[in-house]
Image: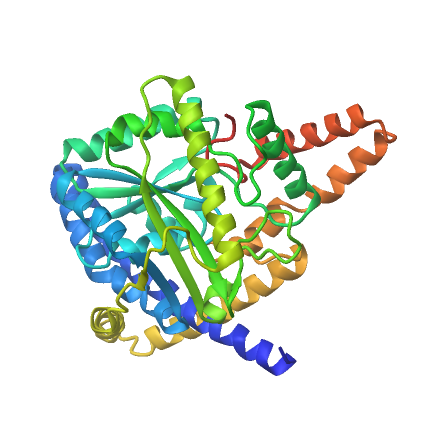
Length: 430
């Protein structure tokens, strides 16, 4: 790609990201306005919140659609997911963590056909990131900080509260608990997962990290028979992005990369049965991940999932997405004009474009990676991860080449960083 083409792609991504962030900001104000209702009637508050999401989220999804983010699903598998929305108040979907935009795919699926409120179980620091993080906090997503044992009470309380108010929703999470790039820390984490596989008698996974079975076991008790898996393959230009973990050409898609150019996403849905016994759950989760690792290996080799299934694109839903975005811009302009600030929406969009572009570029230069799961994350993670790989390599070098000491240094640094930031994992320990 030429320098001009790269610049134009970057500006396109920032323009789309500014549009998404504006919708998140507008919806954030709406959710803040209805917060007092929760003090009086939580069920009414959640019903109103779910309605606002059905109205506003399509506008948030317009820019990814304009960027060419296409999701393909098998018809029968998709019907299974749609039936779950009608049969139960809660179903849980667990995705492989091959990208930083899994949550965006969840929204695109959740608000297609029979819309349902989509909640996320994600890492605690996300709620502090500006606009989208604050908005998801008001949406009552589940934010976790420590080991699953430490966060179990918070998760149980959140799920129990939604069931008590009979608010239908889907909970989405990535049960691998981490995203790995190509640094020394990431390589150490991959090796740790490979060793965990071997310790249980499995061949090391090539495309997936290991699942956090304790978290899955508890979530399964809430979901009952409505526990589902989404195995996702990403393609750009005919190349699978989330290929083997050890492949130097592997790309971790994030908001920047999928808004920069068209991306094809193929999703294979399946059910997961998890028993009441935790040891049984461990084996079931590992068997499931072995199967899903094989699915991705087949996709990498043949450009499709096995079974001869036909995967068709979900509808683009242009009318609802365009009308939602335009309505939020016009309503924002009307309110600003009434307050004597007729140019506020235009200034906000320009300011978001400049701010998002500057923060992402700075974070990318500092860390060498684009980590834009949600806006402003790249700059935040560039600070949080500063010196992580350098510190790990220094400890390994200090170990003077002793295999045992090197392994000990790696383990110590991985553990220390996870404790400091709680950023690498949703469920930090098996």
